[in-house]
Image 1 (spheres, chains in turn green, orange):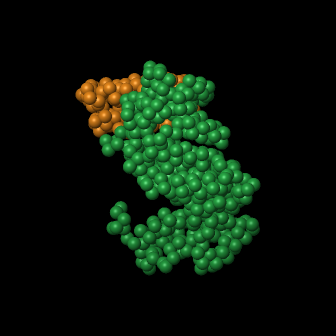
Image 2 (cartoon, one colour):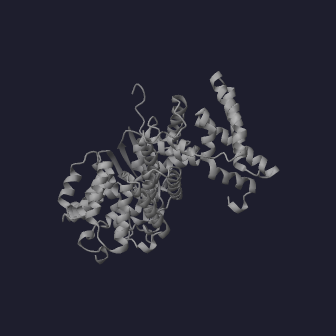
Image 3 (cartoon, rainbow over the protein chains, first blue to last red):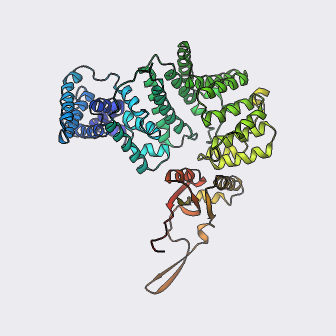
Length: 420
Length: 120
């Protein structure tokens, strides 16, 4: 429905949902640790809002109104299933109500919720989806599409994760980051996974994925704001901003894929590049390097390479070595091999690629093999690898790009690639 | 588990197979896709099917045989081929389905192969 034609109550309820769903879930579930019950309670509250706001007008503080109604609904639910221990929680919950609604109730609860979602006891595959659902209120079917699993499977995954949080009594608190930096790593990785899922959709044809990109960016911004002293949170924000800045340059007007080396930097978002660079500088000042800062630094160098025409293939190869030290994932090792090949070491790069295991249906490995083989002078091997990479791609634009020989361009180290 | 992937194409996509300007990209996409499944060792079998206009449909109603030109259902999307794959679970089958060229220009239906009935 068109937003302008929507009744104000519905529009207000939706706006409140969008802006504060995660905070409301966090506040309602913080004490009971029951996210599913909190979501049910919020659903009741939103339904009540639609009915009541339409007749009686929108309250002065819609979020506080929703919180009160949701807490009451959650209280009723718990009371129905009450044990002595639970009843205490309910009393405490109701006691908090008055204090919270009078002042601004929204502090850092969302941060605690992010840490709950990325707790090591939660199935890693469920962490990013759980964040998207509990912090941003996305429904299971939409999340399932983004992560390419059936809606039923995603629904079950989310239900299991919420049950685990409730039954295992995972604390709704921000852990001591000095003691447990890997907990922050879990939060950042889950946000990155959400962004990466959407980023793969180069066509931007799937509007649901375009939404997911901005939602991941929202989560990265939120984390960096809530934890201003954490260099890696800023690193992730910088990394995502660098990628996001190039979004409109990744496609030609006819829909074909444009690789980074051929993009027009004039189409990049200047604001986002500037914000990305500022975040990376602030992170660097903290002298606490890490995986996401290194990845952001790599993207920063790529950006400078394209904007200035200067070549940074040697520092890029070195940065990938550093990155491999922080995060020797398959994706990083594949990208590192390409960076070395771009820097003139295609022989060792081929060896690196061929020494990797479990890559037979990993699309980036085949795309990398095509590029590195071509740089090593093996046109035939490159074409075969590119065909396999194309067959493994779910993106028509990437498929066309690979089958059309998009991997054939001069190495950045041998001259500006515009001359090709 | 074995799944059958049923590849449905919209007419515009199907027409590319015989359009000289588009045929190379069209068949190249399918060859690359089937090649990747074969390379990964998941492909058990499958075929491409000739265009729906070549179909003949038989049906027997009240003892009378009806033979008609064309496919059974006259829908916009038509079955263009199928593959039988062996993968661990539905998520893996979905991943292969998403890579089919017709996934973005039609649809892919994923059906588990039924185990033999008890006693068979």
